[in-house]
Length: 388
Image 1 (cartoon, rainbow, N blue to C red):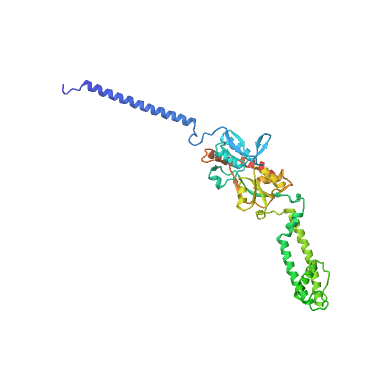
Image 2: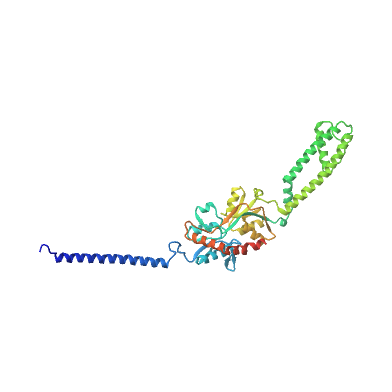
């Protein structure tokens, strides 16, 4: 009996083994089901880990700023609008445009989550990068100066005043004064001892009379001639110099007035101090002008800046070069002209909130559009026409 195994002990061991097997099967079954469900989820959403769930429709903040955004029979068109529609089609989302009147309003809408992103002609700046994200650049531009067409000026009086205070005329006057003083002393020295001489013997007031004679002769208006031989020789030479000087002065004045008529008095950033320059409030142009100590007339819309220029409330407009070029070639043709070179190069981008999940798919779409030629086609459509 002592060497035989208990049947009860054998039963317990068999029971425990079967129980463990059942638990293991149940555990493996649960793990397998969980893995299957996860695999199905990943198959149903293969880009779940790489791509954000894009909201539809996306709210796109923009503003009217030709040729980037233009109103067209109740809808919007323009380079930025066409570009965004191509991007939206590329990433497969629907979108809705919301119009604002200025860039600060667009920034505020994005910051307050009233819009998912903004597109128009929005400059990428270091200050804006602190509070927002930007896409890759969508356009390379810069700031430029626009002025009234000088041919439309009502009066030449301002041009004459500008001529009298021009550097070239001041140089001519300086040379004339030196010549008058030299000629006056020669005449005083040669005439003071002549008994019938026209110049008094004493230095004062003799030198004043001599200066008057030299100035009048230089202007070819002499009413008296020296009496001495030396004085008459000086007088003849001086009258000849006067004829040459009058011709030179007339030519210089005519040239300066012609240049002013063709170019106006504003040709570069160096001519803007002391002038009133219009631009939109909160723009990079307004910041640039204040940095250069230039008086700024800030308006809400660029159309108001155009009006200020035409009504002579402003002497110039400084704004994005492609926008000014489009206006000068269309609505402002013959009324305004672009002067000078690009003041500061800038790039425009699509603006988004910080850490936006839309930035990566938008950048990928932009690169694809540039590689497949769509971007170049849109650029040619909106900008090549105005250059030709």
